[in-house]
Length: 143
Image (cartoon, rainbow, N blue to C red):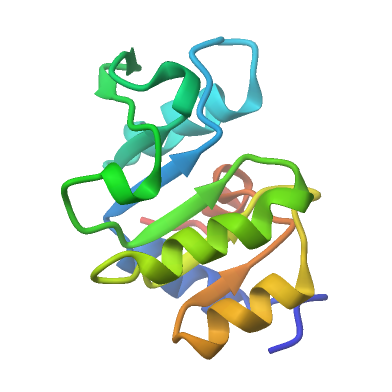
């Protein structure tokens, strides 16, 4: 799949179908974008699981933080990546090893790595890159 643009239906279907989101790079700092997006997603009814090795065992917005995707004891539908683009490939590698695998890996604004996307897609994982669900959700009037 090319990742320069996305069909609105593709993004909308993802946002309507996922229920549980692992948010990598989650921060307890209310001034950080990951905190605001996590708060937004929680307000829309998603189950959001923060992932941050430095915060493991603590809570962010009332949700227990895990060190790694592999530590999450429940099925994850989507991995939202709030890490620098050079880490997207390693997040995809972690997602591939999850059982069951997430349906989607979503790279936040400026997070794009086409080789990582091709690897994820080869394992049946849909990719979105350089987009923010907290922007796309209201833009597409997801209900």
